Image (cartoon, rainbow, N blue to C red; front, side):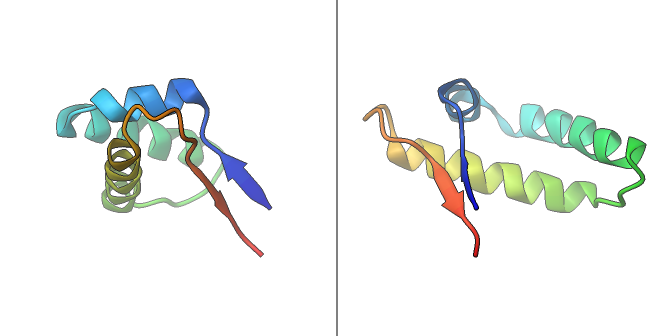
Length: 70
């Protein structure tokens, strides 16, 4: 499976500060909770912060962020 981040997501992650990442993490955890999934907010922040760091490392070179799983 290959997952690709949209350009809009990459742009949002590029400019997101820590406060925004925490806010979005809370929304993400609430969304997963509505489906009965238990998801730790600290882990959600860690994941989004890591993604933001990766996107910032890519910069504005029009490269795409993606991940794959086997």
